[in-house]
Every structure is written in C-alpha cells, then in structure tokens.
Length: 353
Ligand code: NAD
Ligand code: GLY
Image (tube, rainbow, N blue to C red):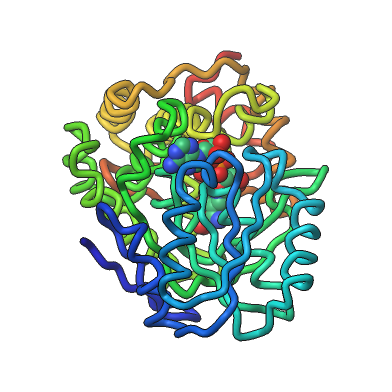
C-alpha cells in the first residue's frame, strides 16, 4: 500500500492499494472513533457493486450507518440532490461530530464534500473514490461543488476531507470509456510537471496502477499545499481544460470530459510551439501518448467556435484568461492571455479555421 500525506488546511492521508475497501471502518475509527453516525453516500451503480462491503466494514467498526443513494451521472450533481442529502442528514439526526462518507466517482465525491462542508456549518467527510479520475484528481485537494443550470461546479466550497481511500480493485468494473477519461487526467500530470511519470506511461499501467495513481496524487498534493485556494500554480492542473471545456460544451457533452481534455492538451501544446515557447517534440510525444491510451487527438471544432465557447469559462477574469501551456517535456506554465487572442491561439494549436 502507498500513503501520501496532504498538509493543507487539514492534514490527511491518501491511501492507495488493492483490497482496501473492507478496511475502511478500522481506518476511519483511527481518525474519529465510534460511537458516531455515518451517512454513506453513493450513486446507484456504485452502491450496487460496493456499498455492502463498505457498510459492513463501518458497522463492524462500531458506527451507526445510514445510506443515501442517488441516480448515477452528472445530471444528479445539482441542488435538488444536495437538498435531499442535507434533509436526510437532518432527519437521521447527524450532529457536528458525525461523518459523511463518499463512495463513488467525482460526482458523488463533489456533492458529498459540499453537503458535508455546509451541513451544520461543516462536518467531517471521508472520500472513497471509485473512478480513476476521482482517485487521481477530484477526491484530493478539497474542491467540492454542485452544478447550477448556468454551468458546472458554480456553487461550492474548499473543504478538505479527513482521509481518502483508493482501492484499486474497484477499477476492474469501470467501463472502458470512463477508465479512458481517467487516463487523460493521469497523462495531464505528466505534461504539466512530471517527466518521470511520462516515462512510466510508455507502458500500460493497469497491472501496477497503485504506483501511477499515488504518483499523480503526490503531484497534486504538492500543488495543493503550495496554493490551496487556486490563485497560482494549482491552476497548472487545468492543462488542457480551457480547450477541453470548450469542446465539451460545443459537443453538448456528447464528447466525454477526458476525451475533451486530451484534445485540449494537444491544442495547448501545438499553440505553445507556434508561439515559440515550447520545443516541437512535445506535441509529437503527447500525440503518441494520447493514442496509446485510446484518446482522441483531432479537434472537431473551428478556432472561432472554441474561442466563443471558452468565453463562458469560469477561469476568465474580465478580458483575460489564464492558459496553461507546455514549455518542455514534463513542464508547463501559466500564461494570462487576452480573450481576443484565443481564436488565433486555438488556430495555432491546429483547430480548423
Ligand atoms: P462519475 O462520478 O459520474 O462516474 C462516472 C460513472 O462511473 C458513473 O456512472 C458511476 O456510476 C460509474 N462508476 C463509478 N465507479 C465505478 C466503478 N468502480 N465501477 C463501475 N462503475 C463505476 O464521474 P467521474 O468521471 O468520476 O467524475 C466527474 C466529476 O468529477 C465531474 O462532476 C467533475 O466536475 C468532477 N471533478 C471534480 C474535481 C475536484 O477537484 N473536485 C476534479 C475533477 C473532476
Ligand atoms: N481539479 C483541479 C483542482 O483540483 O484544482
């Protein structure tokens, strides 16, 4: 098993390994010992696969456990589900000393984290991510949120979990497309700042996923510790996301987040070469890596379409947006640019005109 310590406004452990689900009760008991109430939150797909093992472990450790299950998918990450969850916590009499446990992908993790951050002005939240994306990204770092009709993650809070448990065995039941989405985020860590990870990714990591997942988490930990509230280098985690979000929106979300980020990363790398800040081997290397993990590399939208869609990006500040551009293999930097320049940058990145 691998352990990563995150020292942010809270200090907590992220544990990664095989066969960890049945140990969750004992692990939480070391942090906040029973008797206490736990609200176990999951979506219907994940609950049918893994809730029993987690519930049994929590009960055997001495907790009183209640369950809240909602339909899987991004459409559930809304204020209706949040209010149902708050009400269920109140109905079951959860107090300040009780705990919310998120068992699922990023949707479950984000909504549970936000409910826990706000119920009674904050109760503890423990994360058990079950997708590759949630293990390497959303469960760590304390960003919690729900979507509003106006856009994704528009309402949320920074609130660090008390612990994170990644049982890599659960990745075996992930559909291929959801696994590939996670691979795009793993690859992102390599190009934003980890050349060693890039060398590891030359071979499939499925048989030794804990090593790669722990490496990504350690990379994210370093950025979160430096810039917990996302005003500086934490934004490096957005590599590929300005173009990616534009692609997602233009496709009406029929192109998955991971596929869109893959396209966005390559646009960024090619634009960086065109602007003379990155050597040309970087996009070539990136294209090969993305293909190896069966991710798309061709942008189906024009530079003008992308620029217009990027204007509604949360990262925009007035007439500027901070782009993350690769500057070498395994190195990237923040570049504030004028929104008026976006179309020419996307065109330089190879988007059709
Ligand atoms: P998700 O939570 O919707 O999970 C994807 C699908 O996989 C769901 O249908 C789920 O039921 C299913 N699933 C989950 N685990 C499974 C398993 N082990 N076996 C079989 N099926 C399983 O999506 P996601 O990709 O995990 O997360 C995306 C969300 O994460 C978005 O809402 C995004 O905004 C958020 N996010 C948050 C952060 C953050 O820092 N908080 C970072 C990145 C993404
Ligand atoms: N997923 C981006 C962040 O946590 O900052």
